[in-house]
Image (cartoon, rainbow, N blue to C red; front, side):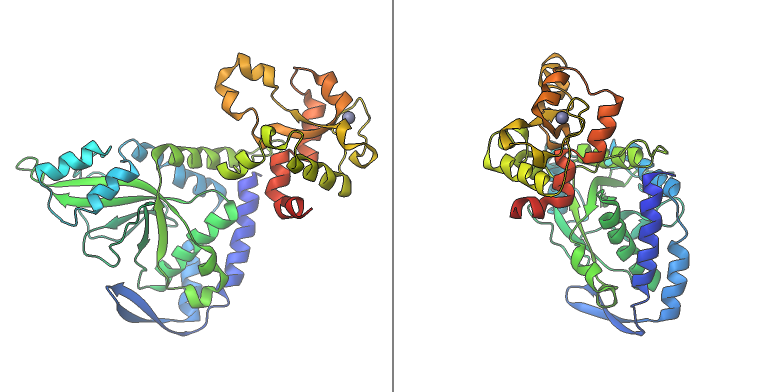
Amino acid sequence: MSQLQLNLEKAIEEFKKMAQEISDGERQVPISHGNTESVTVTRNKVAAALNTIFPINAATLQDHFINLMPTLAICSSPKAFRTAWDLRSKTLSIHDTEAVSNDGGQLIPVNENDRLLKCEQQGVVLGAEKKLIMAIRHSEGNYDDILDELGRFTYQPPRDTSGMLRYRWCQFLSKKIGIPYLIIAIMWFEYKLSSEINQLFILAPAKIIDFNDDLEDINKAIHHPLKLQLVSRSEAYESINLIKSFGTDDLGIDVRIPISDALAREWSYDKINSTRKGRQIKEWAQKTGKKCPGEICQHKHFSSLRSQDIAFGHIISQKWSSAFTFILDKVHHPDNLYLTCKPCNSSLSDNFPDKTLKTKVSEEGTIGDWIRNFEKEIRDH
Ligand SMILES: [Zn+2]
């Protein structure tokens, strides 16, 4: 069973439990510019909604995102999408198309054979199995018109219980799986390309953001909108690749969810080697009973060593990275580093860790793993 399946099963159980907190009553659902509509939510409707969202397994989840990949090829940059959004018009002029294209936009003609490029009313588009949100359509004049500098926007809540609960489920998945939940944002415009083709589309990938507050009290937040942020195609590809590797049926391999760039820089080799930060890590490792993963010292406890006899080892060595330059910018990443005693580190020299050492490093954790799981403890140390 894959790591993804394990995490998904846990997430489903937890979400079902959370959904039990939803009580019967009216919800004021925002529809447009300060107007709301009263919608009745009942526990029966919640139960029925759960039956439309579940069951779902890791393969379905993975396929959902992998199926987005071909569409990314026709997606635009966040900047171009924003330019199109800010036109605030349903009709495009030649000047408009030029502005959008110059910002890295791709305007795609209507195509009735494609679910995303069809002319339909705005709203949520579900994936193939009708479980998960795949895309959202925005058109000018709806609900909330703000798309801010960072590409963030709020997407209107649905007026039915299963739609509402699906918003919260996608947020919950995003949180529990730890990989950005991707959605394709779509806008369409009137533009006379030929006598047959009167519409152009612009697409961009977006991810679900700011979900913690909504998930804190699902009874209060069930009818809240979805907050999204446009992302680049490369970020979208990266997320999908992560979900792919995360779903591998091999528990011998731990797939690591990336730590943020800021954290990766803050705890990179050059920032922790012989610095106060580095000492914090060493002291924390001593206090928590961590051991050297190396064989030479027979896995000495760091607490039995002096700080200057403990080193930060590289999994892929610095020398190798000069030979294989594609890795150069990652060689000092905290996930390429682990704590070791000096003799074990020197004996490894420029070689890759063998299978035993690799397993031991994985068990004890890379510096990245420690930051992932114990950031606060290490900082407070
Ligand atoms: Zn050692």
